[in-house]
Image (cartoon, one colour):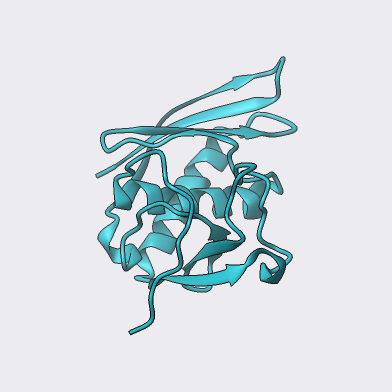
Length: 155
């Protein structure tokens, strides 16, 4: 049996379904709006929030489409898998901008089927079918900062 590499200590305990939903949400935002993944997220069991830098506030139609697309991805029942790689082997499409300065040389990549790939040490479900239904409960736009904050929960 292969031993799991030693990674940096993780400073929080995520609720795996919500944390995995955040990965799907982030990739869907990248695909829909061409923005970066959320740099400011608060992920909890009951409800969560993510902030995104955007050029303009999403329309209500875009918000509804975002929710629909996230649920479509969840409904595909994709496997969530892990791969350990050296930092210099990380694929170019993986953003390492959120890594702490003291991140280990070996990184864990989390893959959600053919939909998302990112570096993460958190806890995730084994299959997206375990997540449940994604629901956007509120959102607001800060024109001064160009930040759209959205809050969501799982049903």
